[in-house]
Each structure stands twice: as C-alpha cells, then as structure tokens.
Length: 448
Image (cartoon, rainbow, N blue to C red; front, side, top):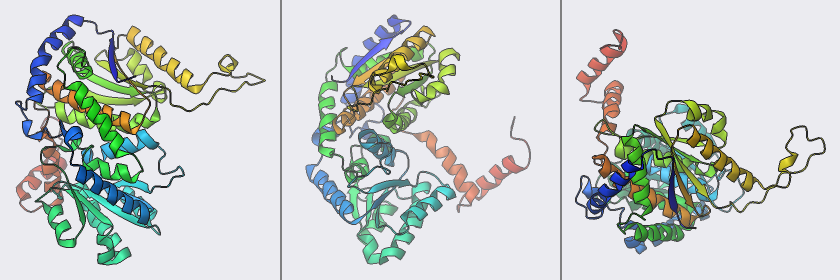
C-alpha cells in the first residue's frame, strides 16, 4: 500500500473543488521556484540529487561514533533535533534508549534552558564514553549555544582538548558563523547545513542523517523513500496526494476550521507529530493567518482530549495517520473469571483492536461534526519515514502558497529572542531592558 489520502465529512466539497482549481498555480509556483521564499527550496530536489560523497561521510562518522561511544549527545533546537528524534522513535522505538541494541544511546540537549534537564544529562554522561553532535547554522542560537558551552567544557575535561576534538561533530554553515569558525580552529569533523534548506525542512540533510545513522537506521532506504515520493508528487494532478491533503485542509480552513489535530494510534508517531507541528506552525502562522497545528496520541488521549474533540468548539478537524499492521502479534488471553467482561475479545490481536478503535473513533468524531483527513501508508520503516517526511514537506509548500504566505521564512520567532536578550543584559539592549522591566515590575500588564 502506497501513501494515500482520503477525506470524511468535508461539509462543503465545493470549497475542496475550488482549492483543487487553485493548486496548478501553487504547484507551478513551488516547483518553478517563483514564489516567496524560493531561496529555501533546496529540499525539493534533495532526495534525488543529494551528494553521495556526503552521505558516505555521514555513514563513516556514524560508524566511528558507534565504535567508540556509548552515548551520542545531540545539541540542537527546533528543526535541528526534532526530525532526528522523530525518525529514531518512529523507526526504532520511543523506548530506544531503554531497549537492548548494538548502537549508542542518543540524548538530546540544547532544546531548552532548563537547569534540571542539563543537570540530569550531566549525570547520565558520568562514567560513559560519549560523543557530541552540535547542530546550529550560526552557532549563536541561545539554547544550543549555552548547552554546547556546558558540554564542551565537560568533554574537554574528560578527554582533553585533543581527545575531545575527535568526539565533537559540528553540523553548521559551510563557510561562516561562530560554530563554523570554532570547528575549523579546533579541528572538529564538520557537516554542512545547506544554505537553501531551512531548519524545519532539514531532516534529510546531515542535520538529521548523522544521529539517525548512529542509531543504526538505514539512511539510504530513508532517502530512497523520499526520492520515490518526490517523483510521485512532481506530477501536477488531482490524484497527487499532496494536492489532496493541501486542498482538504485549506478548504476546511476557509469554512472556519482553524485548528488541525494530527493523530496516530502508535506511540512511535509522537515525535513525528512534534516535527509536523513545527513544520506547519512555523511555515503558515504569519500575516495573522494559518491553521493552528496540534497533536494527540491515541488511544491514550481519548481519555484526556477525547471529550473536547467530540463535543467542544467546532473549529477543529483531524488528520489521522494509520499504518499497516505493526508485525507484532499479541493477542488478548481468555480469563476464567471474566470480571472485566472482556472475554469477547479473547484471541483477538491487539493490532485488530487498535484498528477497530481507530475506525470507531473516526466515525464518532465525524458524527460529532469533526471532519477527518485520513493518511494511510505502509508499516513504519526507514523507507516509510522518508516518504512521509517528503510528503508533508511538499504539501506544506503547496498549502502555504494557497494560504498566501511565505512558507519558508519565520520572522516572528525573533520577537521573544530580542526580549530575552534585553532581560538577560546583552550589550546594546539597555534601553529595551529598562522598557521591559518597567512593564514587568512597575504595574499591571493588562491594558498596557
């Protein structure tokens, strides 16, 4: 089964047809590199035109890390870690660090400013051999830069400056920036973040490929899956699943459905959902427009968010991702006392129960007025992950152009940084700091 898209309870299929009529132009804009943000479309051809020498260099570095380290510490934030974590949990296991394996544990740092998180990671690295992959185009993004200061000092104390440089891998700009300068001066192995690929689209570059390969995942199969999807989506047609997804979600948005919840019935999908939220939230949320991206883990969240989805505000729609059977075979045992009343399930496999829960929930939500988009694909694998990543990226580009925004910039993320720099006391921000402190400490903020 190849990836497919279907829609249930669109409400107004006329609006879907109207969006389909707009898609040839959006497709031509995206593939022709003629729209806003066209300088950041390197991901479009990446699966089919990737530098094979670079892929082999990634594999060699991953093999070295696997041979001399019990842990790889990945330092990055946003697109610099979400894609890799999504791949590892999706393909291997959400319990990757707990299960027996022949690859290093992989921890993630630099995605917060939490002292508790940093302290815990320091304790986890005590007494084990480890390497660091620091990922930052500039090297000055606060969270990963602070984390790298902390863990660079620790790794140099452990192995000495010469030993540490053999265990630090920098994924950064090809020619400039603080991290590139440091890496060149100290002799770190470096990998390039392409100039024309934004962070949230970078999982199929060395940003994601190195930690993914360290986890023992076949990155060639992943790139092959992405390449097959790239060929499929290049065709401008109503049968194009990226067209169908972009049309459905934008048709619903125009009917007042402003929140999209992505849902899956496998825990391994959780971080794919986190990556998807950044991809769509950062790409579309601008100019006072955009579908708000949210995620749920089902069936677990049916016992927490299920009530709201079923009977809350009718501004939400669901995108449900389902897979072929997991390949695991666990069945419900018979119970002599049958106190829970579940003997009618005895002998049924959990995959079948999970599938019925999915179908039953979709029907209940549709009956409750929640439109559903269904995305179905093969069982989770490196190949499937490559397909899914490229599908969501391509559909995101189309969707952004349908929405009338630049899907490839993120000007709004600077606002909090400027305030944070001022409050911490960065030189040159003195006036801004005084203004912010007055708002915070000298009176109520409501109505300012």
